[in-house]
Structure formats: structure tokens, C-alpha cells
Image (cartoon, rainbow over all chains, first blue to last red; front, top):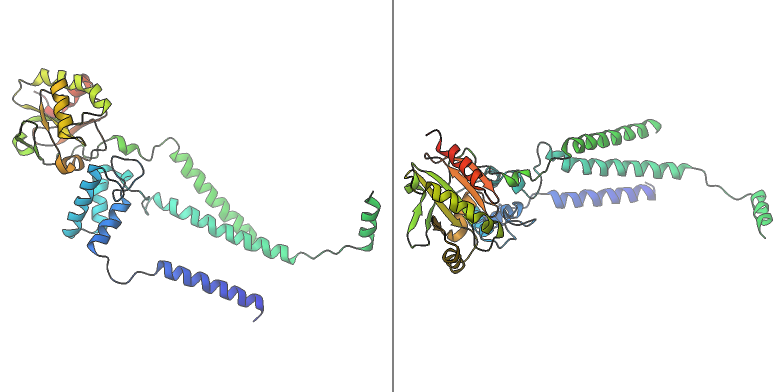
Length: 149
Length: 180
């Protein structure tokens, strides 16, 4: 295998390992406290701008954290809790767009653009590499000499 | 090679087209438009049991069979202060009706500030506190003032986010009470 092939192989291995580490499901199920923190950080504080229920210190955010804690203790799933808040406040209570319906475009389009951009870059680099290297001829050097003051 | 470039250009064009369609269809629509409307319209009003300014309690169960106006407010909010004369005028018009009740639920304020405001401005209807903010959460409030009209059988039929006028209150009340 050429040195270039080895370099590509190493690069590929790094990408695959990184993605595996990021995407691999964590061992064990999250504790109730972790679930409360996770769900409340996905929901917008109803009476403040751009803060999650987890971050906000308003009375309603505090009440919402207690409510989420009670729902988790009662055995509701994260999706059920999120849905209860959507039913009460509407979809804008979610800090992150939903991953279904039109929301999928919000996630999918940047990823598609990234893949296409990377593919285009690879093609362009390969094309530039194939172009012949030009060397200055004697006539070129003479031309440059004559142009000099 | 040339074909591959063509496919990539085609895919890029497709992505741009989809993006353009999405933008074109979404321009002018506010993704947070639902912030200004209640999602509890047509739903049963949340149950509540709240301490009142006069030391008693107001319970939603005690109000069953009445048309109820619930107003979330506090003493420091300027729109609440602007709205106050309309609420008082509306209440005076219907206070003698035994099938009518009105509750002002204090949202995010201290008891002493509320007592001071009530003493200075006069609030003739029931003033209730919301310790723990559970009623504010259950009603899906996003601020104050917010007003809810509840039918005698406990369904929310009207909401107003922001200051209400007497005419708006009357319209909400009529819709909640139904034909008399």
C-alpha cells in the first residue's frame, strides 16, 4: 500500500472511531435526576427568553422542574413528559426542533450540504492534482527579462 | 468523472431547491406564534386550591356551576396596572350575578407588595396567591396579565394574553356563559 493509501486509511479510522465514541449508547440507564435534568434542559422556560427550564430561576421554571420530577417518579417516559408540555404550551416550548416532519429538514439539510461540500472538495482536489505541472521555458524567462525595467 | 460532478451538482441543486421551497413557505410565519395563544382552549380548566388575600382558600371545585374569569396578574407589571380599571369595571357589572365568579391569581410577586397594591388601588374580586407557581404552570401561563374564561362545567373557552378591555372581557364572558 502506498503512503497516501495509508494516510487515507488512518484518516478513515480516526473518523470512524470518533463517530463510534460519540454515537455509542452509554452503558446503563440514566438515573431519575439525570432524566429530570435532561428533559428540563430541552424545554424552554415559559416566561423567559432563550433559557431552558433547567437554567431558569423563575417561579414557573421551578414549578416545572418539580412537575417533571413528579412525572419521572410516576413512571412517565421522556417523550410523554415532552408531549405533556407541548400540549400545554405548544411546540415552541421545545428548545430544539422536533426530529420529525418539517423539523427533519432543519437537521438534514445542513448535514446534506456538508456531505455534498466535502464530496465537491474531494473532486476538485483530485482534478487539480491531475493537471500537469508547468515549468518555465527558456522563452518564458526571456519574456520576463525583457519585461523588467 | 464528469458524470459524477454532474450528479453532485444535481444533488446540490436539489438541496438548494428544497431549502428555497421551505423558506418560501415559511416566510411570514412566526415559529413562536403559539406563544400568544393558549393551547388549553376547549380543554378542562386545571384544578386549583389557592390561599386568598383574606386568609381563606379559593378552590376550583367550589366554583363549579359558575362562569369564572381567572386573571393572572401582579403588582409590578405595567400592563396589569393598565388593565386594572377594565377588570374592576367588568367585575362591578356582574358582581351581583350568583352564577359569576372572578379570581385574580397573583403571579411572581410578594404578599406585601400585593397587599400594598390592593390597599392603594382596590381589587373588589377574590385575590389568590399561587405559592409554588403550580396554577401558573397548570394554566400554561407565559407571563402576566393573562385572562381565562371558564364555562360553568369547567371548560376554558376564552383567553386573553396581555391587557384586556371591558369589551374583550364581556365577549369572553358571554361565550363562556353561553346563551342565557
